[in-house]
Length: 280
Image (cartoon, rainbow, N blue to C red; front, side, top):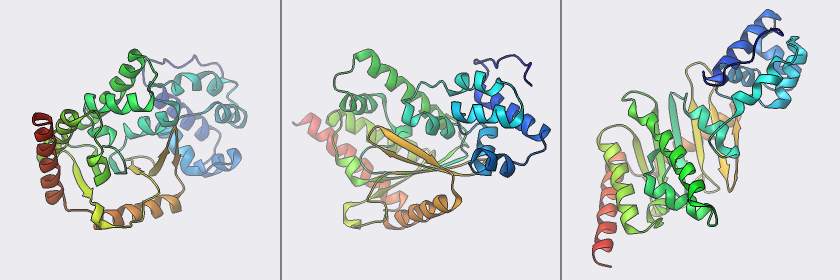
C-alpha cells in the first residue's frame, strides 16, 4: 500500500480512496466497528468513507495511515478526494446527495436546491453574497444547477420534498422569477419525477420549526441526516439521531397538504405571480 501511486483525481477519487480503505482495513483484519473505535468514530462512519458518501478529512487520513500501516498514502491522497466546487459547509452533503437512492427534505425559507431554476438560484446567491462578483455568483449557480441533473434519471433517486408555504410566498428575484420557479416545480411533479408537499401556514406549530432537514438513504451505506444554517452545515450518521429526524419528517408529511392539493396550490401561486408581473 505504501508504495502505491497517488490516486488519479479525474477518476472519482473519493470512490477510489474508499475502495483502498476497505482493502487496507480487511488486510489488517479489522471490522468497520473495530477500526472506528481506534479513530473514535462509529463503524458506520468507516462504512461511509469506504462507500464514498463521506469525505476523508486530513485528521482521519493521518490516523488511518497510522492504524493501518499505509505509510502516508491516505494523507497524500485525501486532498484530491476532498476537492469540491461547493461551499465548504455544504460540500460533503452535496456529494453524498449524488449517490443517495432516496432524499427527503424539509425546506423552511426557500425552494430546495434540486428544484431550483437558474434565475431563482441566482437571486438566492446574490442575496447571500451581495458584494460578490458576477463570476463568483455564476460559479455558484452553475454548481447548483448541475446538481439538478440527478433528476434526469427517471428512476433514481426518490426525491420527496416538503416545502413551507413561506418559501413559496417569499418573492426571490421578482414575480417573473417566482412564476417560472413554481411552474418548474409543478412540471417536475406532473412528470412524476418528484413528490412535493406544501406545509401551509394554517398547519400551525410543527416539529421542525427550528430549521430545515435533509435525510439521505444509500444502497450500500448507512443513512445520513443533514442540518444547515447560515454559512454552516453538518452531517450526522448516529442511528438514533437519524431515526428521530425521520419521525420528525413523517410528522411534517402528516401536517402538510397532499401532493395533489400541493400541486394545485403551487400552480395557482405561479399564476398569481404571472398576474402581478403583467399588471404591476
